[in-house]
Image (cartoon, helix red, strand yellow):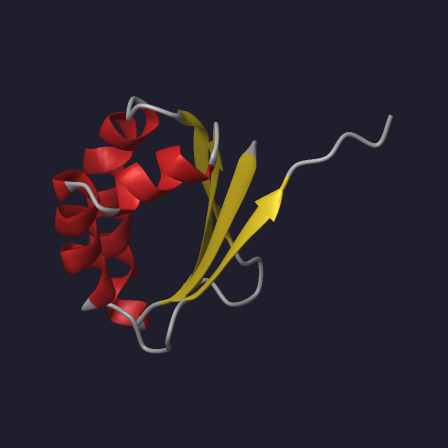
Length: 97
């Protein structure tokens, strides 16, 4: 399983626009083939910084999403709201047991 973490910093005046776009598309992303889970976190002190956490069955599922029309549409509306370059990580999920 792949865990995708994306840190995004928005113009403070654009936060509501991001949240609206996320709300509009979250169920579509969650139901995309290979997506196991999707959530977002907001920084406690810098409320214009968000992280999306998504869980994917494998690398190919994540790549299929990243090449999809859904992603292209969501990302086109999201990237114009940034005030800093986003940072993304793909990590393997390992059990500690």
